[in-house]
Length: 201
Image: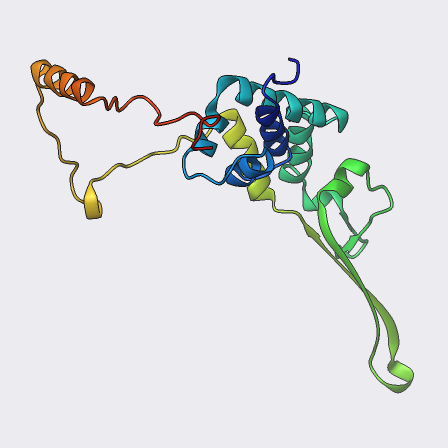
């Protein structure tokens, strides 16, 4: 899609695509600070589409795709300690990074090498201790599961202070009468007070 016809809308979309907060992007675009207009502008279909397009181009330039992100999460989520350790002749485990692949290295969060002297006098010996830590497997698996829709989230809705939700039976006649009264008073609740380009901006 081409640049937006309205220059301030275009500047707003550019700022939002860079990660600026709604209110900050609104000011960056050249508007005066306002409580509700930034959110309205952020919901305009052409602005939403333009932000998505700009962000998509940026991601494509960086070769970032959903598939690539999932593959990187999978390297962490499915990493196994056995990929980094071997058993010696005596059965004791030791680290072996000699055949470490790039995918296996992606799951490493930390490797610490510590050299020290153990003991005293003639019995002293040089010791090297190597410790490693894998990245958060559970976190990676949870992100993958959420993306795949594996975990259903339950939303509980309550009234004030956790009490029951108050309900009221209203007839269609009452709703119509209320709408007519609002129209007569000139206050349509479903219409915004002003456009972001108007005098309030």
